[in-house]
Image (spheres, rainbow, N blue to C red):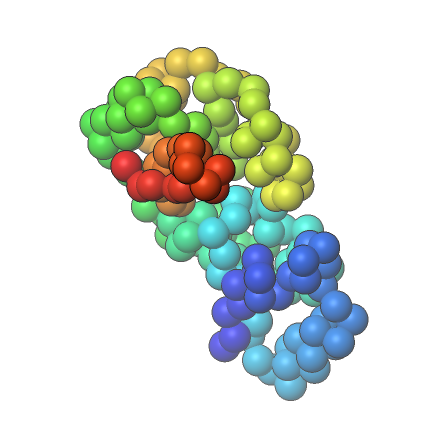
Length: 166
């Protein structure tokens, strides 16, 4: 079995698969190797690339939180973040004025329309939905891929942007 990451591995900087890579994957499949994607991306974002490669096995998506068959109908594994933890993360993000986006039922949500959500949706090739009340969604469940909060401040002496995790 070969499980391939997508960003900065399978995909080029222009978010494409090179012909040589596609051919190597096809050869592996032709000799009986199971090839799948293992990515932090959402299932809908990974699916077009899996289809392009002719994959017909389950995809590992959302940093391993969901494994679905290629049709998206059968979920083999899923792991969600409990509502109380999701609500606490939303609270901290709001207190720190940090952008937050969440995933539920293969839908990307953000509490506001901004350059961060637009850029992410563009790269991922998926639409997004604005939901000002993320707490309402959190009552059910979320898929959290990553939670990294950064503040950016400009050093007055050098003019250099400094990123600090909070």
